[in-house]
Length: 376
Image 1 (cartoon, one colour):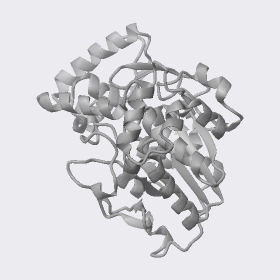
Image 2 (spheres, helix red, strand yellow):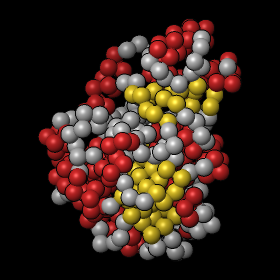
Image 3 (cartoon, helix red, strand yellow):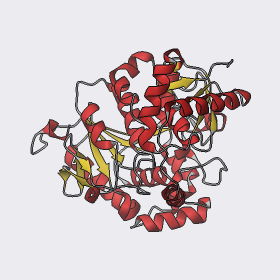
Image 4 (cartoon, helix red, strand yellow):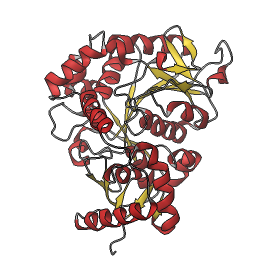
């Protein structure tokens, strides 16, 4: 995808999209971009290489040094090409996304704090001269204050929000799928959202449906499912968070960027940071935690656990027991990531488990989610 503009990238880029979170937000940004603007003119999505431990066993985000095959867009910003690969032991979904999404993916390197991200964003704006800049967040946790008890991953959003507020260019903040990330409930977000600029429909999902078959992002999976009229209560993440699937799910709203930075205490506090470590320290002070600390602790636990092989008969029995308990909790759907972690399987087993379940009960696969029938 990086070759689209040739060696000099001389073709004028019409749009720049900043994905507030990791690869999942990049997939959602691709859907929103195509739905709003069409796919005839080129666009660049600036995104993190920050995958969960199911994909990347190394905690925290990856930088350019963690990849081979990148191509420079500017001296400090690199495109993820179709040939790019993460350097072991790191993992990343971005190279495959670069092969399968129509937009060009550019890598956010947050290791130099907000000032570093700002420099990257400013360099892209100067080099590409985009006609529009959209900051896209799935779920809406970018609008958090920082003290909400349900907040799980504020740092990535705060870094991009603070950087977008520092550049001398108009940036539109778009919230896709209010509440679908399981962090801030949709009811708490309603008063913070502006006009509905788009309601995603099945036709908007089909061009990248193949990506949703393998990409593990749960919030984006829920966004796609609600666009396909799936309704109910979905359980996600290792913590088993219940997320309602409602008519609000496929909506995309504009939010005021200045209001967002005014609410987000962490984004304001880290605005002058020059390292990720400084931003993390402030996250601990303001939010009470750092999501990278959570990843470090979880990675340590996973390293001490024996690797469990996927035995089909055992896995199906465990899934049946999980579903029995989930029904008692009122759950109607779940994700394959949730199944994988609930069964104590390694992230590498996710695809095998998914294939096993779909082969055993194809009628229960409501792409990209799994339907838990009301009766056993």
